[in-house]
Amino acid sequence: MRLFYDIIADKRDKKVLSKEDISDFLQSYLDGTLKDYQMSAMLMAVFFNSLNNEELETWTEKMLYSGEVLDFSDIDGIVVDKHSTGGVGDKISIPLAPLLAELGFYVPMISGRGLGHTGGTLDKLESIPGFSVNIDKETFKKIVRTNKMSLIGQTPEIAPLDKRLYALRDVTGTIESVPLIASSIMSKKLAEGINGLILDIKIGEGAFMKDLASGTRLAKTMQAIGRRFGRSVDVLFTNMDEPLGYTVGNALEIKESLDVMQGKYVPQVTELTLRMAAVLMKTFKMTGSVEEGEEKARKMLETGRVLERFAKTVLLQGGDPRVTENYSLLPESRFKKEVYAANGGFIGRINALDFGKALIRLGGGRLRKEDSVNKAVGFVFAKKAGEKVAKGDLLYTIHFDDEERLKSAEEYLKDAVSISENRTKGRDLILGSL
Image 1 (spheres, rainbow, N blue to C red):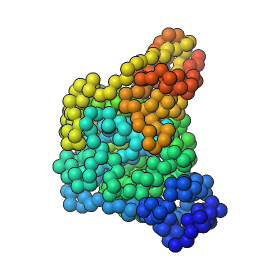
Image 2 (tube, rainbow, N blue to C red; image 1 turned 180 degrees about the vertical axis):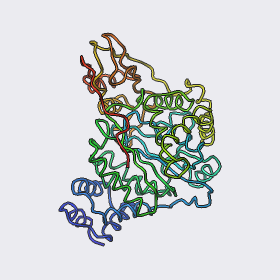
Image 3 (cartoon, helix red, strand yellow; image 1 turned 135 degrees about the vertical axis):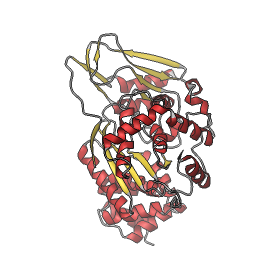
Image 4 (cartoon, rainbow, N blue to C red; image 1 turned 45 degrees about the vertical axis):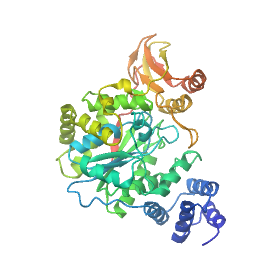
């Protein structure tokens, strides 16, 4: 094996790494021979110089087979999952998984924690008293087979290399890299033993992909990896200029997710949940069109069965299922501060990035991988972009526990909401598909 320094230096100098170099380097990090500071240097070199197709295939394959690849071939059904590249207020996985289960899919969903200014599904689920996302592989497989879904974090057996790199990328400024994002997502999802995957690639202010062109590059990269491993990969591009729905913050987003599962229409959240379910149904020929799938999914939400499926999942994973009917069981902040419109007009924008960073300052996200997360803090919006407001109208409410953290968060919120005299049309929620 070559010296770690030489492998890092080659990528720094834009040279192509051999399959052996990549395999040896990643294996050394997995077994502890290679240290965090050395891997950080490699991640930064990849961030600036990327990986070619052959390098990326090797990198992904090494991550995928760093642990066990689950096998659900004995299941008489279609096994699928969903992944989002990360947004602010993005809670779609939570209502989507039980909806897909009720529509006939099996959903072994392995999710992540908050990454940078974006929230994480696991942090949100852990707002539910007792809910465990740390379930061993055999229990996970059993729950999926009997319950048709389970929502967990990465186990030690499943893509362990990705788990370590995911945490390191969060704190080394190497998040927004197409090959690192693609290999992370696809290694983890392929390890689930799925037949198909739907990707929600966020575009805009609060996303890692700021424009549709960069999002398309990422999408095509992940679709190519999917084809290499014989998996279906659908893609939706969605707007992340403003937070998704009306809540930002872990427990607050659980409440909004439960509203969707109760059959209530929550703008943006319900819309995207239905569309993702519909695309998967069409891909696997369960419906003839996306429109037919959306109608079928909408009717399923109205039956109450999706909420029942989620309550059963909560119980199976050690949580208190009463939370589906009693929101007061969720963490609640000690204080609230309401923010009002200084003048009348139309809301021009609600900056997702500013609110994502402010959530970190409140304690609802991470600056370092070892940071704990306050599940109660966050924001509840009274208005959305494009809506008319009068002077003194409530714009949003801050849920917080600490005055000093509030002051720190407010530094990011000074210009987070803009109001103009004329209404400007923002981008649609769903920007396109592949």
